Length: 576
Ligand SMILES: [Zn+2]
Ligand SMILES: [Zn+2]
Image (cartoon, rainbow, N blue to C red; front, top):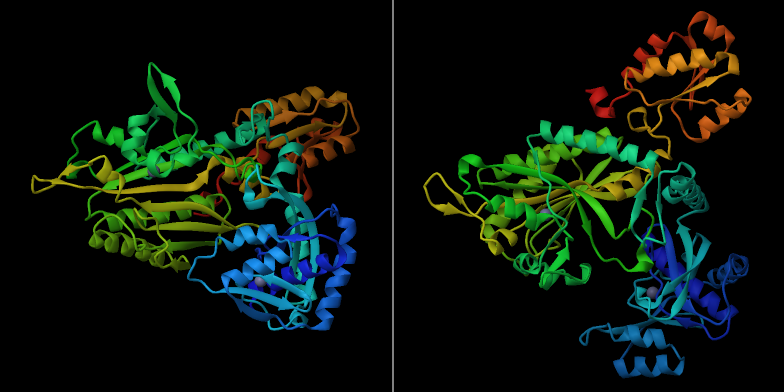
């Protein structure tokens, strides 16, 4: 069965139940979500999870009554009259969003009638399994100056069994929540004193970021990229030329005045990379140019949507721009897609898919170039065997693109990288190169980010690994735990020895029972614990404990170092 339809229909049933149980309910909207549905209400009573059983009971009643979902077409005047009569002010506001030429429909099930486009199930009785999960405040239309509504969330599935799977996954996601783990493992924070959506990387988080960046840089140099570092602010004139002030202004922060000139904090790195391109005459022999930057940008996000590391106001993109000739484009795109796959696999993501977005009705750039660009994207996806869906006409006006999606350890999909053509910016900045014919030509320009932003990628990694980072990314790889103070000197020697191999190793010097030390190391998700008691000190060995396998026996420090050397590298590098 079409789950979207089931979930949206369940939202109707929930709204009907809330209207039966509470007075003066004003309705907003109730869409389906990825796992269920929500409905936004305004009502005098404050809903809490304690109300859920009663609402669910009422919903089960409505489902048992098996009402049909009746579609009722009305004129705009009739719709206004009906909604005014019911005092549905939010719905009246939403009514204005419906274009003049569109048919206005209400859907009626039992005594409940709702302005809605549909589609729905045939009857309420077709709903098989659902559960209410949470309630939260939500501003009308997501705008902070609007009234705060109550958003009631639920999940729905085809069967009770499927519902249990969903619930389990939600529970698992809750345990892996990167904001929770970020606190527990002391990885990062957001400080009100500084402002929302601005991330502070604590030493352990910063160490992981550093490892990601080192790996990223090495791979880029190996992949034929050069790095750029560019400024964080630029003059208004630059952003006018780039078109950002015209088309992207609402995502940019207010300008600052420097010597009477307006400067803007950058929301993107591209105009700076273009300036570097333009700093010299380029010939076809110089191309392709592949320039990457871990570029920190700032974009406005409503405070209501900020969310841990996933939605922030300042972030560092793993950005790159490729400038090339038409003859090079196909090879460049294939190389870029392969590069992206390798990168993502090294972080443990094996299930990768893509969206291909093609030319919209209104677009800039020659059609032949669009065709060549789109073909090269599609061919690269096919060559690499990546399953993809095509969003026909869904591309940006300036070029086709592919978005790469990964599936994490608990089956959730995340959109990460993007490979995006741009036929607009090279025009605006009048980019050129001298061709073999001696004439001036326009290069192809491709924006690409593979991890997206370091902040968001880190948030996804924390949840993917549940905080138990693989050895090569663990901020603390090995902790040495002396059984008693008598083994302290020997333990110090072990630490020094492993440090010489550049391992991230520490010593637990607390005078506590070994059980407590192990528990603490376990909570910190440290991959290896080396327990050193009198026996080990005597035999010059360590008793190795792995965080998930537990005790794996005693060995010499040299053997231990050799054993983990092969593990201390990104996944794919090891496999390859
Ligand atoms: Zn509906
Ligand atoms: Zn760009």
